[in-house]
Image (cartoon, rainbow, N blue to C red; front, side, top):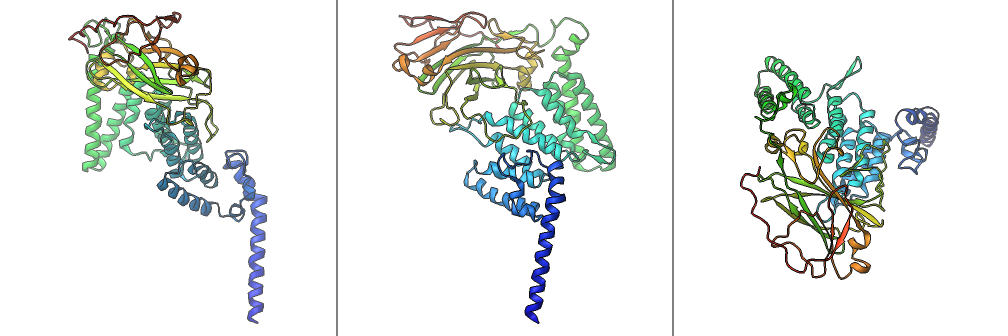
Length: 483
């Protein structure tokens, strides 16, 4: 009798499993494919979800949790490549796992680095696409909207209109019954900074007034130390913004008055010059001048394939795809670094020789770019340059085209693969590029048989000149009134 009861129980369980599988295939899986699957019925482009036993038995969330625990072990061991497919599987199995989306964005955008901790920016479009998908799948909470805005704000640090869009979305109401107004009050203020960096100073001021009103209402409802501190921060930022709008001549310019009595006038000539020397295969010595005295300037330096997909000046159209493709263009090179200015000069050795997978150098031609945008500058630099570069100029490399509505510094040169790898005729002599206004100083690299490629201007042609037979004259002492 006992055996018969056990057999009956097993038969019932088996029938239930078969019924569950049939229900999964007939109803649940088609519903998942329509409403949750973001990859056309494929997991990571190759695995059909119907092949996944746990999914067929209705254990998607359980399997997702197990996979994420496994991913944590890979984090601890530093096996970052193994985490990517797990992130994709977990987000497909359980699209409401916001922590996985957020952690995945951070991992993809920040964790893949070279030996000198430079991020592999080929992954940034994938990180943004993952954030956009997470926001679409979880529209009733602010988190993925904010995380995507943060990636634009902090990692891309250039196209601030995108940051503004996503930060606004993180604070917007959603539908009639749902809301995204669960955002923490302390996280709302970053929208103000994004608006300022996007050149929308009036809107930033209006946003500060709105946040002040919200802060006053919160303080009245809950007069605790936390609400008091948040309100004080908003009031301080509001005061600073009003002062800067006046001192930087923003109000005067809006009213059509001349800027002669304001901090941005007359525009300051930054005196940019640069020199790039290939000292070893895939090792560049980058140096130059920047006539701005206070510490805080970081000039962007980019080296990339000349034909890099979706490339723009000193960057990429990072938002070119909504597909979460976790395999970046591995045959392409994109290196970005920051040149820190001290005592009006910058000098940095950039070694890419230890990371051949990140810098494969498979193309024949490469572009080297220098870029500086006052919108990304710290406040004490913007006090002189303004939000849009009103107080900045350069006799040679001021550019009004590569970023519409902004004055930036930009110059670009070309180098060949043979020069960067020191192949062929470049084996025994360093390839060298420099702007015509660059002046050698003590400590600058001067090879015995160097060949200089003089770049007269962005519109001029590249010419070759022999190395000077006598040392260059020493640099003149910089003016004492540099900003």
